[in-house]
Amino acid sequence: MITIINYGSGNIKAIGNIYDRLKIPFKVANHPEEVIDAKKIILPGVGAFDETIAMLDQSGFRKILDHEVLNNKIPVLGICVGMQILAKKSEEGNLPGLGWINAEVKKIDKALLTSKPKLPHLGWNTIKISKTNGLLKDVDEEQGFYFLHSYYFDCIDTEDIMSTTFYGKTFASSVNHNNIYGVQFHPEKSHHNGVNLLKNFAEL
Image: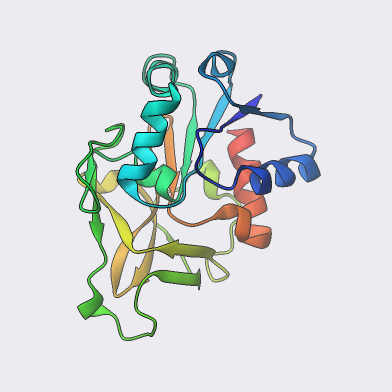
């Protein structure tokens, strides 16, 4: 059973609609105790880093997520800011992240950008797969994914990077460390590639 965490952030309905169409069982966890039987966990997120991590803390999910992900090794997929809070900290705020991946979140340098509007990085962009992984099976790198962000995920260990994308500079657009996965883009807005990715996560 895929469990989508509802802590007040992220496009839960759109993700659920894709799994409905794929006929893949899922549930939305509104309370921490509903995570206990999860086989896979999706951690969505939109907005600012501090606001998102604060909502997760206030929701009561953080303790059970730490246990299920770090101790029980349940696969988890963080989406957009849900990926960014996997890091230790962010230049966007002052609160510590989950720290599940050795990384920091940094602001995209506008001085490196030529396109307008410069920030946020908005719309479709390609990816380049750098680490073979089941999550990106049958994904079209040239079609890419839909992005919406002004900060990027800076991995301390480059072996955690699954794919990269260029916007002013090359940054990690998806990451993986053991059972922990993160994507900077929005699969729920990325048409066929996004459907493939969510299906792949269910099959990991």
